[in-house]
Length: 224
Image 1: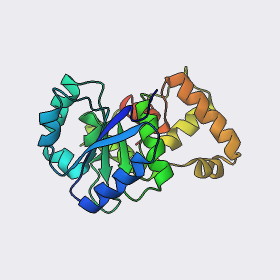
Image 2: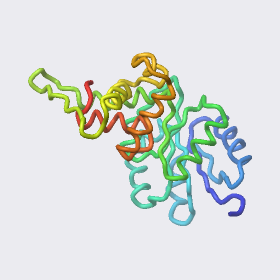
Image 3: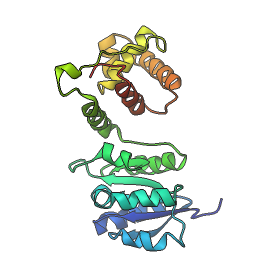
Image 4: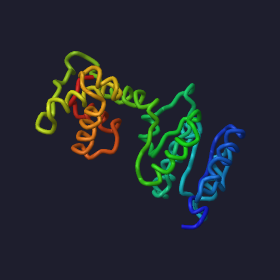
């Protein structure tokens, strides 16, 4: 693999942030930022003839042009889309994932975490900051909350899949609890919690606790 194998485009409204991010990324082996702009149409014009491996795009620009982003994903499925957001702003996490985002980065993240997330996405995995995990779970829970008492659906505990303790952990994951919270609630060690979480992820064939929580909510395995 030669230097600058990964072609990156940055689309963000803030020039100072773009330039700082470009400087950070180009210090990383194999990364080459060849587009840095606030105009998404530049990506549109270059895509037919230019390879883009990673598109880093401000979430507000993404939301304004999400149908165009969907087109990009359909026509160029190998491109990894990563949304950029600020902790103070609207994050639209579930909406972004629905429209094909592979990863989510907070502009306040430390440089090492920022770089790590890009590498994770390039490996074909999804990545969402811990700070936004609860927001994503809440958005999914709203989708499945009954509007009326008559719409209530009885929880179907997946007892054939999980031990009682694993089910307890899954319920707490769906409630957005972190490992140390789960350990305190269930009065077990954090190491034991990690063991149960790993077993749950393996049984569900998913890579992250957020995905596990969403699937549990969607299948009505947990109380919301």
